Image (cartoon, rainbow, N blue to C red):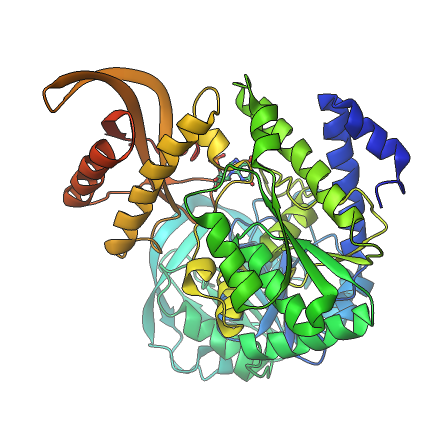
Length: 556
Ligand code: XMP
C-alpha cells in the first residue's frame, strides 16, 4: 500500500512541514471528492430541504426538523437543481440570511424550486424572497425589529400551518426588511405590532414567516414546524435511529460486497459509532487500527481494547507506539510543531499497519453532517464560516481507498442516538471531545513521561469528580492542564517547589465559542484537594475562568 503513491510517500518522508501540510491538503481534497461521489442520501424516506441563504440558523432549522423524525438536509442556494431534485424533496424551507432581496446579487434558489409542486416555507429573508420573486414588494424598515414580539393570528384563520396554536403567542424576530405587499394570491394570516404581515400564505402550500420558529425564544415554533411537515407537506415521521441503522447497514453491505475496510479508531464518539455501524454490516471484513500514541488519558487504551476488541468482538489492531511518539516529541515546545509531529507520526504508523493487511478497498471515517455543511458552505460568501481544526487522524496515504462515511448525514445528537441503539456503552456515546494530539497540547512546554504521568493523574481526578457530580454531559469538555509554572507550597512540614495544574471546564454548542463552566465551589474544592494530594509533584491548583473568545478551549 505504501508504494502506490511514491511521490506522496517521499514528501512525507522528507518531513518538511510545508510538504506535510500540502499532503494533508491533497488527502483531504481527494477524500472530499470521493465522499461527494458516494450516493448515500437516504432513499425511500421523506426529505425536506433547507435552502440556505447564509443564515446563522440554517443548521438549527435542520436539527429541529430531524428532531421531529423527518430527514432534512441543508443545501446552499447555489446548489444546481439536479442535485436538489435527486433527493425528491417533499418540501422546502427557505432560510433567513443577511442580504436584502432587492440588492443586486442577492441569493436566490434555482427557479425550478417554484415549479416542483411541493410546499415552501420561507423564514425571514426566505419570506421576503418569496414575496419579491412572486410579485409582492419588500422594503427596508425604518426600525430594525430584533428580539421578542407578540404574534396575533388573524380572526378567521383555519390554516393547516396554524393548527393547535394559540391565537396570540410570543415569537422571535430579527429583521431589517419586511414585506409591504404580499404577492397577488397571498393572504395575511398573522401580524405583530411592528409587522402587519408576519405570516402570509397562498393556500397552495407556500408560506412566509417573518419570525424565527426554529429558535427556543419562539416557544410554539416546534408545533408550527410540525404542522408544516405533517399537515402541509404530508411527511411521515420515519427518521429514527433504528431505521437509519437498518438502511445504512444494508447499503454498506451492498457497497462493500466481499471487499475489506479499515478504520482508524480513536475512541471518539464519531469514529466509534462509524466503526460499530460498519462492523454490523460486514463483520470481520472491517479491521480497526488503534494507535496508542502515549498521549491518551489514564486507562484509555485498555478500555478501548476491552470495548471494541473484547465486548464488540471487532478485529482490532492495537499499536503501542508510545516510545516512537515520545521520542519524536523530545525537545518540541511549540504547539503547532507538536500537532504536526504527532499528525505526521500517526500517518506513518497507520500506513505501516494498514500496509501489513494486504488488500484493502475501503476506509471508514466518522465525518458528520456539520463537517459536510461546513465544507459545502465554505465558499458561500453569505455565511461567515470559520474553520478551526483539521483532525489529522485517519488520513490514508493511498487515496485509491474509497471512503465510507456512514455518519455523513447525522448531527452529533443523532450520532449518539445511533451509538446507543447499536449497544455502545454510555462512556463512549457521551464521551467529551478529545483532541487528536491528546495530552501533548495540555502540557505546556516539553512532553516527557514524567510530566505525562502527573497530568494523567490530575486529569483522571477531574474526570472522576465531574462524573460523580453527574455533570459530564452538560459540559462540553472538562480536563486538567499542566502549566509551565512552578510555585512554592507547603505540604506536611516541608516547603515544596511544585507544578501548577489548571482545571478547564467549558460549556459550548459547537466549540466555536465557549463559556467557562460555573462549577459548584464544593466540587472545585474536592478536585483541588485530591489533585494536590494524589497527583505527583503538584502543590497548586487554579481554575481557568476564561471564555472563548478571547481564550481557546485548549491551552495550546
Ligand atoms: P480550541 O482550543 O481551538 O478547540 O478552542 C476547539 C475544539 O477543538 C479541539 N481541538 C483539537 N482537536 N486536533 C483535534 O482533533 C487538534 O489539534 C485540536 N486542537 C483543539 C478542542 O479539544 C476543542 O474541542
